Length: 240
Image 1: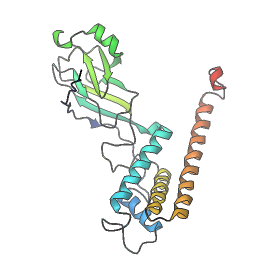
Image 2 (image 1 turned 135 degrees about the horizontal axis):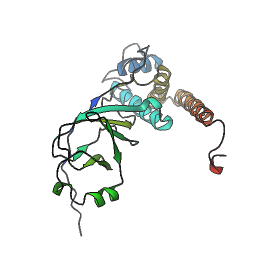
Image 3 (image 1 turned 30 degrees about the vertical axis):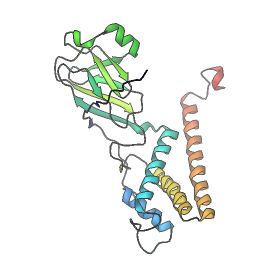
Image 4 (image 1 turned 180 degrees about the vertical axis):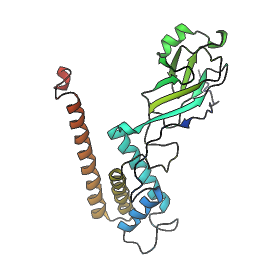
């Protein structure tokens, strides 16, 4: 027995709404971060496609560090607001490429929240969405990388999506939503990788340690903030 996997992908555009950006500072772009890494390697010439490591490799390490930092810290400013205009009669929509969960939807046109249900509940309510008349959206359901609305909309309303994003951005070179201290942190990670590429293990270990110490410090700070928000009281025996 073999499985047939659907290959058709949904294509749907979301527009950023209320973007969070920090002061540009020193390391305001991916290019600036690459130059910072190159400076730590004591190069007389900038990193390029012909150097070891290449500027492309450093770019990949910086993006990886950004993604790991986002996963470890779950920044409150890592949430993103986006909007999109629905199509009459269409109930399936692709989620943003950096979607990582914790979604909430609001119909901006009618100013009402759209509740989310489980796939099972959705199937009970709408066994076949295409057989239901178009109307005001009652519920939504997250299925993999898609959101399904029931019933299919009867008007081109604007929908707002609030979600937790991964470190992988819609624009991979976007560092504007990271505080500058976090940008220095991801540079330390990339510098460690760069020294490994040069087989300078001692320097690589030193910058790897700086990255890990900084990551630990920020995690402890996050824990203290969360604990203070709970009034320094455990909500259950499992948090004692």
